Length: 152
Image (tube, rainbow, N blue to C red; front, side):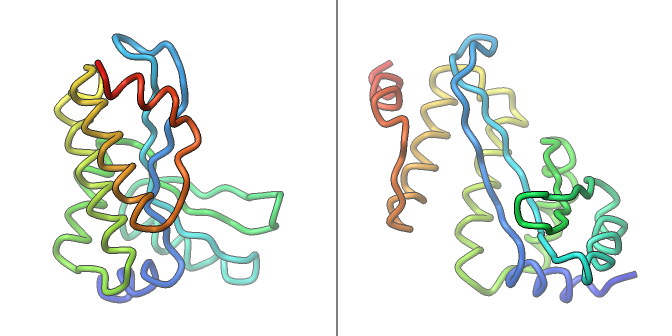
């Protein structure tokens, strides 16, 4: 079994907390929200990903052919809510990834409460992601649709 502090430190260096948004006619809104937690490694070091997957007891490992790496990923809202979030609350990140984690956590909470299928819940998610993107100096690509949504 891996030391929980090792898992957090490894994530600080190699992990990613991400929320993807795609335009889709999904239930009552026109957007699909996909949160994820992932860690990538090259082929030689991929063994640690299997140990991290076993530590969390969820997720999957896949090959990324575009950069010849392996990726451990958790995409299930239920598993993110019940396994990943509690780990990082108990064993906090030390780098700027902490900000990404808390944004992901807020989005997962909205989704766990089934609010992401309402215009208000979706607006909250967009506000969280816009704030994070702005802090990082990143661009929001569907700004026109986002502005339309924010007026709802």
